[in-house]
Length: 328
Length: 312
Image (cartoon, rainbow over all chains, first blue to last red; front, side):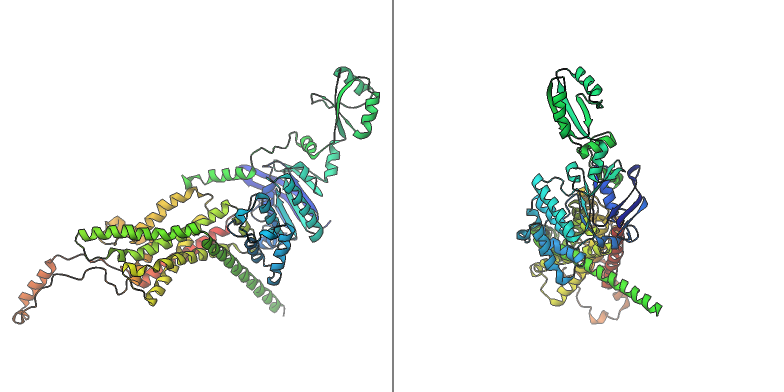
């Protein structure tokens, strides 16, 4: 395996709080790798360590052969970043933001204009290049940031919650770009998300919760771990129905839910046969195929918590408390 | 042979680092200057503030000086170099403080993660602030004749030099502070407890004469004092701001000129005459002023670089 990122026993503590609890993983060259987990799970902290913005408390991380602690500038040259929070200068125009970046990453002078043109075209902002960023919508800003992250042809592109707060249409078009990018430039993409449906776009996913990786595989493999399709029925006589299901159909009931639920291998072929043969009259029937939500629920015992405390907000609150004496 | 190769690699490494440093300084500086010209409100504000000081405070104080007897003292002229320093102080501080805005609006991350040395960001910021403060100060110089200082190329050049040194020093001071600040909430505190005392104790508005002991000590440790001193010395060179009129005694008659008793008497009489307090233009030699300002600047620039380097 040709790993472009190798992380070993990475730990990050903020005082008493351990945000990342000794994670290890490797990412192959050219893959789309996703970190899936709720806010506050340690995703952004991990990205910040990998892109040299934070030093780890212990453990190591190697990116394209460079150590993220010892070789910070070489790492920085190899990566492109799209942060969770906007990081554009909105008093400057789109083009000026890109120019700043092109200088900073030493894009050769003769290629500068052509590359800026190329990335702006890709994110369909060519007609806005001379407008100040403060006039842009959220989606446009995000697209511009992606364009900027690619300007220096990074080996790895980090996308921290690339579609957070965007409308579904923009989200889709951003995903189209990401797939296109991978095809065109053969770059490795490392992204974090707490949207389950978005994680499906990844080649492999690491599910992270409370600073630990609890599963790492392709979306299909993860889903198959949860088991087959779940059929939910309501009937005229639930007690009788349950007896028939267990005795005659040999299914195992899922106990912790209020309805009659059970798992089958293949829902589509089971249902017609089931309706034909089932003796109790059925009021409704529904089929649920496993999603990453189910995987997450099964692995962690709780649903993903999108409304939970934002990791960054928690860090800020922490930093504030710590710096209290200066201000008060 | 091998040694030559390794030396070659080392010098390549060094020149690469220098190029990166230069690029970092250039783009950080360029961005600040671009933003300065775009921020119309700030331009108007920074331009209006010194004019308000000169027109309102200057006129009011002049009237007070006149009615309390020191009629010939040209207060506005005295005050002008101080106001130039004030403009530099506020512009430099504001541009340093913009680091906190950059942090809040995220652009600082883009800068911190770029493959350029952190020190180049600090230096670029310092020169960016220095340049904008210099531009602001330069606009003020247009009003020189209005306060009784005629245009003079050498004078303007010297004032620009002092302004630039002060601007770079003060921006370093601001950057060293702002690098560790996480929010704008602390800004009013810096404003009230650092900027204003520095300004008031610098001698920009009043002469540093006949002050109580504790205040004199404070003015002596305030680096701004030396900048204002230098600025005033340079700007008011050859310009008199206090009346030279004093009580003149009649010529000593020839017959008494050789009489030692009379001479001792007359010198006693002279010493007893009421002296009009003289407004001093410059308290320290220019070289000392410049050494203090440059020393302060270099020290704080190193602090700023250090603060930037250890930032996460």
